[in-house]
Length: 95
Image 1 (cartoon, helix red, strand yellow):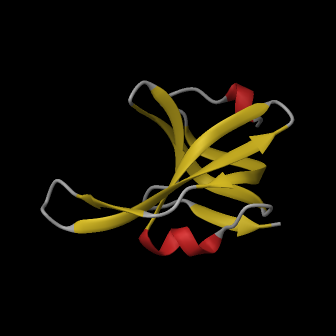
Image 2 (image 1 turned 90 degrees about the horizontal axis):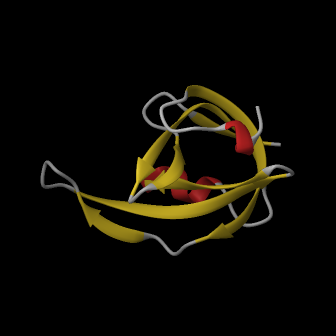
Image 3 (image 1 turned 180 degrees about the horizontal axis):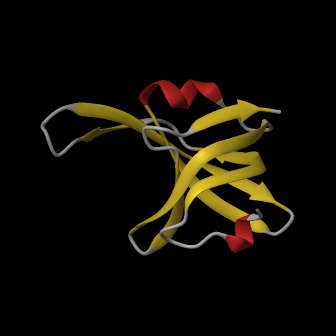
């Protein structure tokens, strides 16, 4: 699967790409009152790019320049922008 083929609602995504950008982590308040850290990365392949949100422990798993595979991810939408997420069951594999 390529990034250009992703659409909102697609689950069980397995995709490879290069991390080209990574934001500084920021703290967000969750619906249940807890606080979490989140950072955004841009994942790019030859067909395009997509923003992926990394939460808490996931943030330290990747850096700019890493080639990764996302296994069992899903595509959602945030502020009308397509976003790739790992969710509870997804994982990141460095290539």
